[in-house]
Length: 144
Ligand SMILES: CC(C)(COP(=O)(O)OP(=O)(O)OC[C@H]1O[C@@H](n2cnc3c(N)ncnc32)[C@H](O)[C@@H]1OP(=O)(O)O)[C@@H](O)C(=O)NCCC(=O)NCCS
Image (tube, rainbow, N blue to C red; front, top):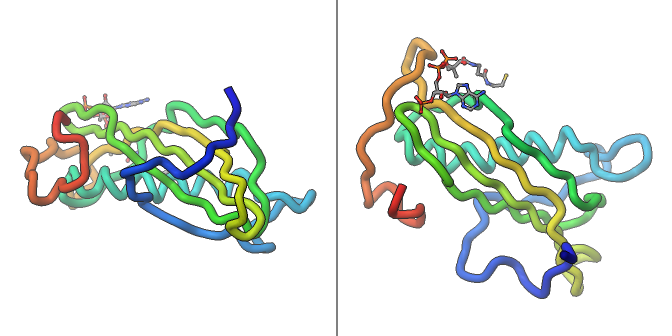
């Protein structure tokens, strides 16, 4: 399946939008994968933090696919959805789209990842997730 799409995911708001700078490039001039991983971790932590109503720590990167390269100057949109919750853990799927060429026409899905976060207490130990609070979770999947 092609990674080029005609529009960004309709009806969804990105958790994060950011444009990589020349300082984020690798020695070949394209964007360094570690920089993208950091942004994905930040984007995924946002719905996890809301669901946990407090501090979370990343315990696992379950999968990470760099399907297409990212270029300096792409406008990146990070979409993050909770796909699973446990007693203390929250698993989030993150999809990243690049708008190429200064927003002209080309939109490419560049990265997809799944990460697990754990709600932690003030001693950095796992803490049970609080009950779902619809007012806090606005925009999250209501079945989770
Ligand atoms: C997060 C942390 C507090 C969890 O403590 P822990 O004793 O390892 O956690 P537990 O074994 O009790 O597991 C906690 C939850 O994580 C889940 N989990 C554990 N290992 C996992 C793995 N490899 N993949 C996915 N989930 C995992 C467990 O299933 C459990 O979920 P549940 O309560 O919903 O069933 C601890 O691992 C930690 O501090 N890790 C470092 C975090 C960090 O610094 N991250 C930033 C990157 S360096």
